[in-house]
Image (cartoon, rainbow, N blue to C red):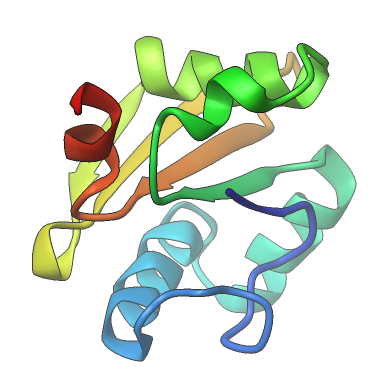
Length: 114
């Protein structure tokens, strides 16, 4: 599982470029432009998690990050289909409006059921 606590960029995100381009559009949309989105992410403390296998969650320490990711997985406020069967789930996790964005790769759920 990849965890990104700052603004995601193509250099720090392990996603295909065309999938990342759609994710970036979704992250910017509520803020109008990228500068406002970056400012909010910096101030509020948003988190982006990319998961290849949901079984990875059981191996993670049960800390605040774990519970934020589990909230996005179990009770997302937003679910977006991404290209190539990727999926984005988002949960608002703080009173300031910070969100946890969980991207599931195409095989994330399948591997967890094996």
